[in-house]
Amino acid sequence: MPAVHIIGAGLAGSEAAWQAAETGVDVVIHEMRPVRGTAVHQTGGLAELVCSNSFRGDKLDNAVGLLKEEMRRLGSLIMRAADEARVPAGAALAVDRHVFSRRVTEIVSSHPRISLVREEVVRVPAAGGPWSPVVIATGPLTSDALSADIQLLVGDQHLSFYDAISPIVLAESIDLSKAFRASRWNRNVWSASGPGTSTTLPTDAVPVLAVPGESASPEGDYLNCPFTRDQYDTFYDALVAAESATVHDFDTANFFEGCLPIEVMAYRGRDTLRFGPMKPVGLTDPRTGRFPYAVVQLRQDTLAGDHFSLVGFQTQIKWGDQARVLRMIPGLEQAEFVRYGMVHRNTYICGPKVLRPTWQTRGRADLFFAGQVSGVEGYVESAASGLLAGRNAAALARGQDPRTLPRTTAIGALAHYVAHADPAHYQPSNITHGIMEPLQQPPRDKARKKALIAERALADLDAWVGEVAVSGR
Ligand SMILES: Cc1cc2nc3c(=O)[nH]c(=O)nc-3n(C[C@H](O)[C@H](O)[C@H](O)COP(=O)(O)OP(=O)(O)OC[C@H]3O[C@@H](n4cnc5c(N)ncnc54)[C@H](O)[C@@H]3O)c2cc1C
Image (cartoon, rainbow, N blue to C red; front, side, top):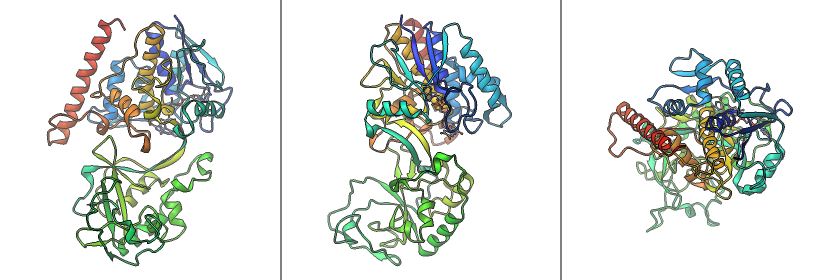
């Protein structure tokens, strides 16, 4: 039986190695630290936490709490080490990062079926060669040489090196008495030279010249938060005064013009945002029959119907300040943020183009991606993807078929998202209730709804574990 090779011993790789080895398969895990470092890691320890020491919520009423419980039921190494290294943090699971990494290192390196090799892997191992099956779990800071080879494998357009993420809010927290639904359907009003080429901004609200018969837009459904001139000025002043995050060296690199943080645009001048992501042209506020002075557009997430992202609002403003400033947007005063905006180095493949829900690549069954490089976001999500990728790589080594979990479970939902989200707007996602299979008849009570989702997930997970046991896997 061939050994499973795993490249990268971070959260995903360590979990994958443990899961594969526990099924009775030999594993070789290749980790480049401390021989070669990254811009962020500081030790040679396995599963080093590069930033926060929090694994986020640990209760079943939130999606990441549910994900953790599923992982515990599947014998997760990362959860075991995290529980052992736990420090007090209210409803969250936070750890002593040194104890945590030391524990993972001890368990992985003392496993009789795991060999830990300290070396940088610079090429994607060849199909059917001695490193088959193989799991690439090299994280957001995948070394340059390997990144270049992954790029050759998946194609230029399917590997990102950089994440410019707009904030995401919960749909039910948007004030629909202020935000209005419309697509930018009559752009030609503003410019004779064609859509999107307008150089004249309104000095204040301007009457709309409707184009008869055009009511729908291929841009899809947007919610639009309209600003008066005073509201815009107040928002602008708060935005330019807000505190930007202190970031690592690589984050200060030149931004692509196409994904400039909003505050960088705002520093260029008071009206820059009104020519950019806050452009009001073509968006008629039904309450006034006019274009507002400025607009923030919210786009429904393609898979998670209860999430809306702020279009073009990638930002590096610190999270506390970010919430305060963004809640000045009319309609978002009570917004609940599912995720804050950020801009950081992040190497990840376009999951929907490259992966199957088993974390195998579409083109090569023996090649898996797991962790942040596979297009998930977060410590727990990275480990969860490693859990399934490790099990599946081991199944392949034994001559069995890889499997995924139902989308009613948090682990299955993550796998489904990575393999099926819209590739055109693909962004790595944390686990949220929004990407899980909706309940058939959801109750109105939010707490009850979350409880039912968790109940169903754990019942389906237990049934899946039972089936796997029966089939001898
Ligand atoms: C700056 C930064 C801060 C973050 N902060 C948080 C946070 O606070 N909370 C959160 O939930 N998530 C955070 N993330 C996102 C993500 O959850 C973490 O990056 C997480 O560590 C991802 O796990 P992973 O296993 O995919 O990658 P990693 O944990 O980074 O593991 C990848 C491993 O692969 C090794 N490696 C890389 N290239 C090679 C190679 N060619 N050959 C051999 N080994 C290689 C690396 O040394 C590393 O040990 C952050 C990401 C970044 C970049």
